[in-house]
Picture 1: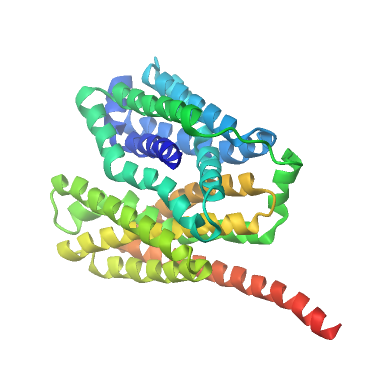
Picture 2 (picture 1 turned 90 degrees about the horizontal axis):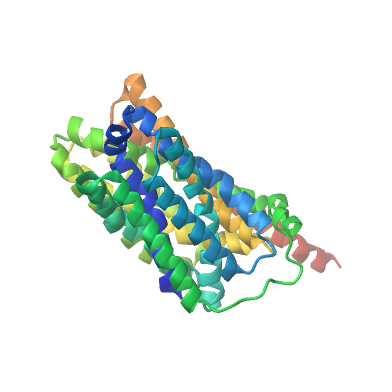
Length: 388
């Protein structure tokens, strides 16, 4: 069953990243500028941010198998519609619809995978489903981009839609029927918003991982204008990034099952060091290649964050898990914006690494506050018991 969920993660990841690779083709096909065509990426991201919490709350009384099935049906249909879009505004609307199931699908699929695993192997179960995302970065997105560039951008969206339809069929065939948990309701899911640890855990990736996106957004320009590479090397660099994500996902899942909080804190320190190294050595072709791989390894924190949310969300698991993907989209927007500000201010392409290091420092501060408050909350009952 984890395979079925990972196939869906692969399709969603490929659809999200491939849009960036076929941007010029979409612009030429619809007779608009590339910045205008780029609005389809923004529309998808908006769909993710809106859809994750709304769907999680409204579907509180729906069985998880049924919810996952419908999410993939909507995802497949929206991508098929994107392939058939007759104009620019239609495509924008269909990309928004395609983004709606994104966060809820990942959140629920991670909960299902973790729920079927042994308590000390939850993060590894989450990591196996997340492998769909990392493989999408390594294989799916380049493949969809190649299809879009050689056979037309419509085929790229159609292929992603077909993967969504395949996932729906796999869920229908292999995922067992489940029951709605007693007391499940939209109001109970909204209870996650009252928990300070949920907000603090969401803030860690929203702030701390922004640098990964700051570097990724401007990596092509950095490689060609600072490091001395030809444009032909850019796809190779993205493959290095994808390999790093896969290595990080496997290692981070294993570590999180053994020491969850230490993994989160340790990875934030890792991000600070790697981002600073990127900022210092981006002009060196060998070092920037190594750094791109190591930055991909930052993905190791993701299974740990997802598992941490399960621990602090109480009985509002679905909303908290889905909101994690809204947090990552905030990191994407924040990192890309601040990286652009640094470059525009004249600090150079390598400055995106320093932006990433500073954001990771801020994320580490949030983590330490979260950890400190948790330890204080644990000490209060112990102190009361001793006093009593």
